[in-house]
Image (cartoon, rainbow, N blue to C red; front, side, top):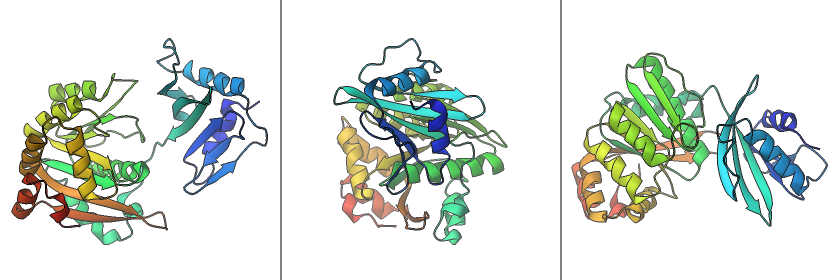
Length: 303
């Protein structure tokens, strides 16, 4: 029978992203491309549920019912922090487990062109305006943002607040004060985290996702107060990212006008075959502002 220790060991395999347990299948670790089975025995439905309950008992949500889907984080002594996602698949639970990394990558390690580093970091030296980050993968976004926040913490003196669902890297206070909040552990939802931001009024706010009109409204109010707000959007390109924000908004015209006034820079991230990324930078010029007000996102320069 598989146990938590085997899961932890599998997460240490080079290139491992998450462990997936599904009833009737062999335990697998998902790599950047493809999977690797780390146990030859197919897991049974009651084994998956037993592992899920074992992990949940270590979390702050121990007294809440499982339901059909959910996520939580657990701390394991000597191992670190694990994130657990689960849902019901054909009547049985499916689990995905990720390990929260303690050390974010350095930006220069991520870039296909290391010479882009200074141009990227210069955007964050003056913490004002709205920064939009577009990519087709969550992993590449998490790596990019965590590397930037780590740099700022080391070399700047800001109050940095993150509202994350979930936390992907543990960031450390250095010259800056970094306050990380996680949905399901520290805050009830993204909107709750944005209310915390209203109270703290950080120099830099990073929000991992926006999915409801209420959340978007809270975010826009923070942008209008002059905070630097960093928001990633998972999409195929910059035009699709801006259109996805419109779909969330109750008032697309208000959104366009706010973006036209406060949007400062857009980063487009593209992963390469060598585990590096290309970063296209679009600075919002007066001409770009007119395109945004008119909803002509396809006319924006593509980096």
